[in-house]
Length: 291
Image (cartoon, rainbow, N blue to C red; front, side, top):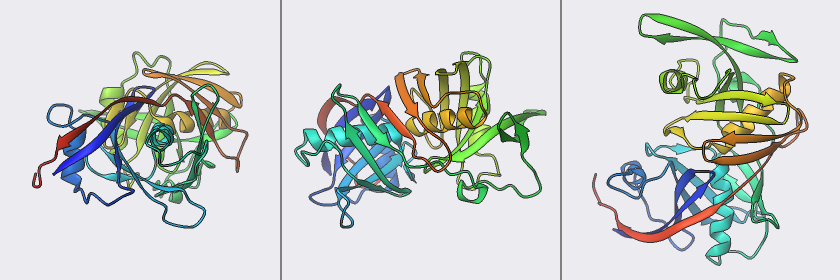
């Protein structure tokens, strides 16, 4: 099966974008995985699919598959690319669209400077809704909020690490580190992602606070490994830093792929994320029927 695709990136977080507004492609998990493969496919952190509106008042449905082929609830950098895609492909002329995801409705908006701002909705803190299994443990007071101390088993020993735990439509566990360059991302990332207290796995954030308006961040993403940037991870990290009393309400997040600006004004309020959305190239690829 030959399909058309668009390769896009937002702060280095890269995507293959597919248009299913005309007809569904009916791809399997293995075929999404093939598309994401950097040696045999196109190569991407996630596959984004544009589908027709599922309900009145919604412009499009936004479907996200990770590089491992699994469908996930949300992708913030992808949401910015989603808006640029539907505008560039003549699917809308609007500056802002309402988009249905697995985790709810988001609204990306094109700015005058070409960057895209996404209303990511309010963060979720209740453990059961993250989801996070808090049975038998209690959070520890930390700054103006709390952290959960979890054991990470590595070889013959286990490290106890404090995490801020929340959801931005997908689960995140954020730890504060002294320096992201020396943080144990490769070693701890898989252990955090697959920690048994996260029944749907989790994205692992490593947050370095430079000052109250500037942070550095690395994220080991669920189903994708470490990426150059993670939009929901940036949102989760800033929200955690604000609740812990360490950050102001507007913060620039320095990722390995670029700068994201995150703004949040407190519990119950939506998180707003602003950053780039770039079309890299377009093409066609033959996808095997069976893999």
